[in-house]
Amino acid sequence: MDKKIKVAKERQEDAALNRALLWIAGAVILEGLLMLVDRYYINFYTDELSINIAMAISWVVRVGTVLALVVAAAGAAWRFKAKKSEKPTLLPSVVALAGLAVAVFCGVIWVFYAYGVTLLYVLIPAVAVLALVYYLYQRECFLAVGLTALGIFGMWLLRKGSAGPYAGLIQAYLAVLALLSLVLLAALIWLHGKGGVWTRGERQVRLLRKKANYPILYVTCVVMAAAFVAALVLGNALTYYLIFALIAWAFILVVYYTVQLL
Image 1 (tube, rainbow, N blue to C red):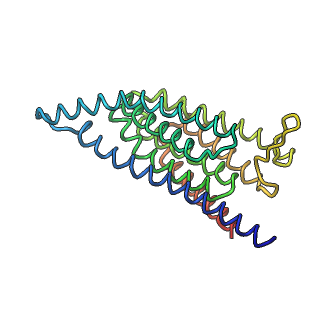
Image 2: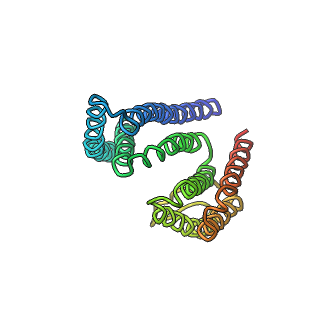
Image 3: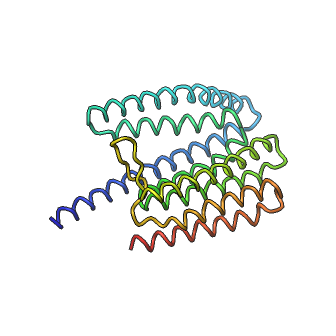
């Protein structure tokens, strides 16, 4: 029986690793496409051929956003139907996520142009790293590291765009994250009292493991809320130090949960 459990666990770990590698491969492909977009759509030359290529890319970006959204919706519907029929959902999930990723990729470039390209240079590898954390670590690790990553991203946005055309949007993003941190803190306190299990009628879903370290999650929520409020009040003067502080906190979280896996 122990051997069967061990084999099943190894299969689950291999499946998780394969899914994580799919995210990494997708990130590499999108980063390669982004470099081409940066070269031939953002920083193109002014000769006739370069202008025509840039116009063609502009058309592809607009059409690609719409088509990718259609593919994502079709993949989601396919996944829902497969899950209802108790069939494998890996392929429809890949189709849905790939369509969504391409839609976001094209949509950000379409709406924000050069700002969008700069944004995607940071966003794409960050999402790939978070996917690794999600598949290879405990769920609470992903929760803590994910919230910290959103904080680092917000500080980076504020530092880069505090004097730009999207300053108000960045401040709204930080305000929403501050509120989200407090809501998440309240939800975790409630979930702690329920033993990590969410109950709806007769259905029970375990959201966090029994031995989850709730104090470290509480500290993460409080630290993030304080960082967002400080950034909103003090502005760009503090973001440089906050970025490094949050990176250090993310590193501490990863080291702690890595030790827990050993």
